[in-house]
Amino acid sequence: MADKRFYIKLDVGYFNNPKIARLTRPTSLLLHITSITYARQHFTDGVVPVNLLLRQTLGAKPADADALYAEGLWHDLGGGQAMVHDYTEHQDSAAAIDAASMKGKAAAHARWNATSNATGMQDALQENTDSTPSEPGSAQQSSVTGEYNDRRYQSVIAGFNAGVTGISAGQERAGGAPSNATSMPDAMPRRGEERSKEKNVPSPSAMVTAIDADFDTWWTRYPRKIGKGAARKAYRSARKKTTTDRLLSSLLSQIPTWTEPRFIPHPATWLNGERWLDETPTEQVPDHGGAWADTSDPWNQA
Image (cartoon, rainbow, N blue to C red; front, side):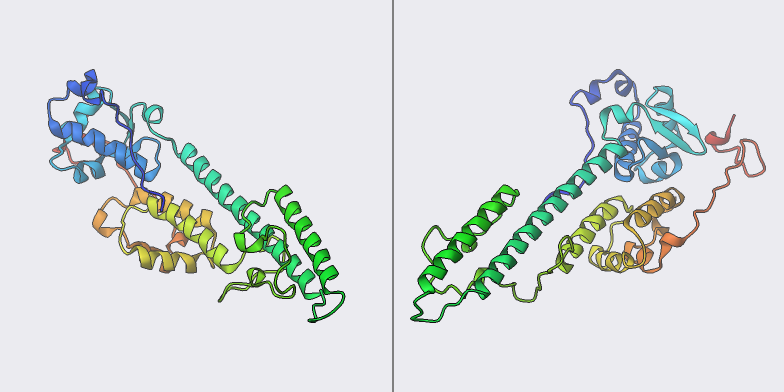
């Protein structure tokens, strides 16, 4: 199984960078790395919530954030957010990740179409076989069998010309007539699965596979990794009610409002509760020196 985890890129000369070398507190360095991993995990292109990272980074203090601002490793965006300096020059952007995901889905769809075409060819061969007389001792059996082999050979060649390369060994016999021209077990559906006669109509198993692939993308962006099995089941149910894009866009719009990790709902709870329908609250950020400002906090000092 492919590794679906995400990784950040750190140059081997990272610790020798002059800006990094001037950081006097190890926690400042750790805070910078944490900000990169957060942006990569949540596809924010370098935008990070400062207070949340200060709580998540072991031993970090507001002075560590000040040091990153002072060295130009962070840029203040206001509203409690910062931008990691030159993030998209060193890490994959959200657009690039989405493009790679779409490319993978397109490749999977192409493979499914190839399988569907091969299945259609099998059905055609089966129909040809069913219409072929094969009574034992019939004077016409050998000639009919020869005509059947010719038709089958032409169908296989046509399949290859159409780009279908996944023909199993059981579907292809090199020369020679089959022992029984009316029996083709290779063309029979597998147990528990009916093959659709309609073109371009995915089978139930193919649809589940596609939904599970979308779930894997959604899961990587969910900030609380708990109960993946239950979440997958809930995601399949949710997809009967809404679209993949709605589930993902609603999640990404709500993530910035989840500032307390312990209050982030479990993934299955979010899906079963149809939380994609929730309105995203607008956070009120008071001006510095306002009635809500805490002047003892260095962040609120002018």
